Image (tube, rainbow, N blue to C red; front, side, top):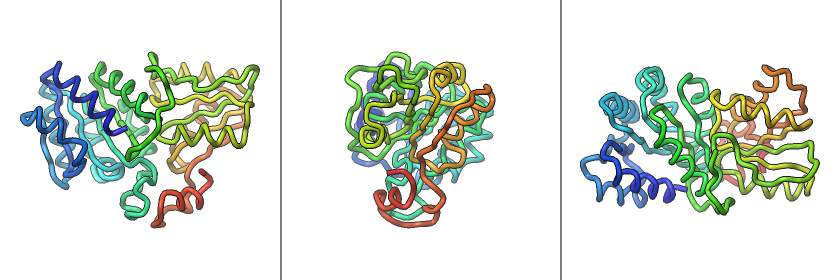
Length: 291
């Protein structure tokens, strides 16, 4: 995922001289190609996420499209005030790119767990969440982001995710049908880096009884489209690597309530038992409901 992001960023930076990358003193082995080719548009803000976000907002206000890059929890909660006040409320073209979504960095300690970030980001009125499920979705998300001068939160896994799609989705903001079972009245919706796990879970537990969708782009902006999809089904299952409070499943549940959709909803997500626990990603997933 990280390499797909960097490929798209460099390709765009060659065509547009207003693209900037700011890192929080990490990303080495991934960011070097951009830094080497565009040294005047690459900045290391150091371990100072508040300053990094302030720099990004300032540059964006002067016509740059800025991408910040760090580990999941650091450029979200540590600089939430700057994201809200400087970037989101001014509707600036800053994309907050994070790696290590969920508990990818589980064994490094709960300071590295990004398990409440969706809840924070989706509370911001101008923010759109981009949570791709494979490298192809990363590229599609980047193409959408680069066309829109507004705030985005691009959340990726650490790396090594297998490609699910063969072709680039055209309308990624309207959801992607991954698998369809004729006559199914049950839908499983995945967001984020667990798309492969979602498919495996469905194969093991649901056999050929459920349609599977990926929603890498979500938030208030595409409520109408997902509502049309949800109306077709009786049972909805969501799958995500985020806490069960405030995440993607909560968003889907709110849509059902607000639109009077009487559906059976199950959220497969991380549970609060893992908060404050230091362990491997696999162990943390086993502690929680998500497998």
